[in-house]
Length: 187
Image (cartoon, rainbow, N blue to C red; front, top):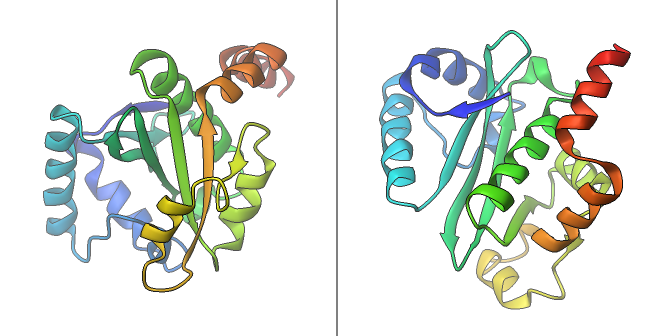
């Protein structure tokens, strides 16, 4: 479902990223294929320096369909950024990718907090975030971070995913891997 970023998927990902329903909500925008390859190189190097964590999201056939990232890592916390190509919206890939990524972040890398900043006008992502049982609205509890994000006026809502709340969710509901395999068996 997830793999480390590499150059082999750049053509697929660039084509998916430039769709008008996706592009406005992508944090790392590239306006040409060459720029996308260069940004991918920068992303791989930044991960090697510990500044971010980036994965390619794959469908069940191993084709790249989007990316999921943890940006601006400081003090065992970072900001989540994820996007899927338009043909893959509403098919459950986002949840599966987040589950796999959160398990890696919380249990393999030492991350303690994941922040999500979602543009106020991005209703699709707002709804998806509020469906997650382990997410906490953070506009009030993390005002200083929200003020930094919205220094030029209200642009984002802020959400927080603490490791302990995510762990409690996993303990109550089984691991993501168990859920994924049971979903596959039902299908």
